[in-house]
Length: 218
Image 1 (cartoon, helix red, strand yellow):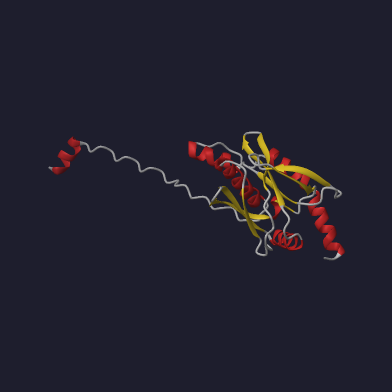
Image 2 (cartoon, rainbow, N blue to C red):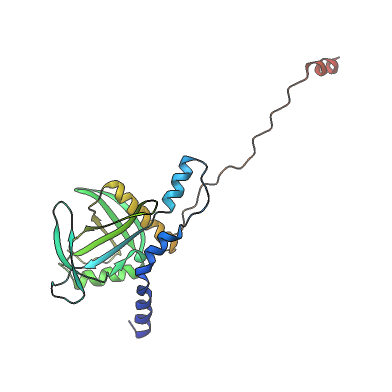
């Protein structure tokens, strides 16, 4: 990577601390819904989520912090304070049924694929700690360390998945929020909405005048 690319990458990463709060404050969707289904769709379109992947490091490493992952069986580890991958590297998120819980699968952008490949190759055998912040309702957010999977092999295709320490409902909020962010960032196209029928109902036919019909018949 040349110096110009490095400067661009650093400036691209510098905005991360303000990115998620700005999304929450913006309120992407305006207008009022006319049906419960449309209202629910509007609310879901407003959901946002952030995700950060932090690499496990030595306890005495500079710029490290200690985190506890998994609530039932806590795993304590030191991680780099700076994530090597975040929500802006994501093209798509989806739920996957897995043994042991609900898994979240992630597909990355080109930049995310490179970051994931280089990190998994150079730090094989280490953990990555996954933390997410997501919306759970109007003006409500939750943050949790969700997983700490081990790099058991190089991840070269820009995709990874992990069993998340959350309920399925929470996982749905996270996945929906990540996809909404990906759409906002144009990492994935906005799904087309079904065209609503706007045809006016046919005017009722006037009732037949029996006297007029009788005269015409004569």
